[in-house]
Image (spheres, rainbow, N blue to C red):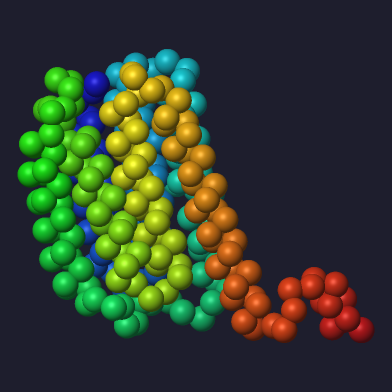
Length: 213
């Protein structure tokens, strides 16, 4: 395991606070994309080697979490007139405070867990728990569907980090974790289709030809 693991995890935690504290949907999407890219690098550094398997999984994580899903979210954002989270259920300042409390609680709780020796001096478990709690907090305190999708993506990133702690015992778990992103992609498609169905009476694309006539 390389020394770069903890700095990457700290960066992921800082991005959690960025998502919690911003009202701009575009900034939230970009922060989740940066988390995805960092997770790809983290996958390689946690394995401690540059063999083919971690490189492939890391590249897949960057491609799906850092590029594909954010691109879909940006496209969905272009289709709607909303650019900010105007009235969340909980204010942004309160969200930041709750996020800080959740992060502190995750660190304290992880310190009491009977972790493997190689995980006791790194932030993998507390960062995983804090990121899962942050994702849940975002999903439960935001009104906009786009932000809730970002919240699910952050939550799934936390699960992905937890999966990295089990790469020796269950090496396929991380690969399965990447597949969870397909569920995020389905969420994004659902948001887009739901928006289109609100604007138009039908989703039948054949009617577009009728409009030309």
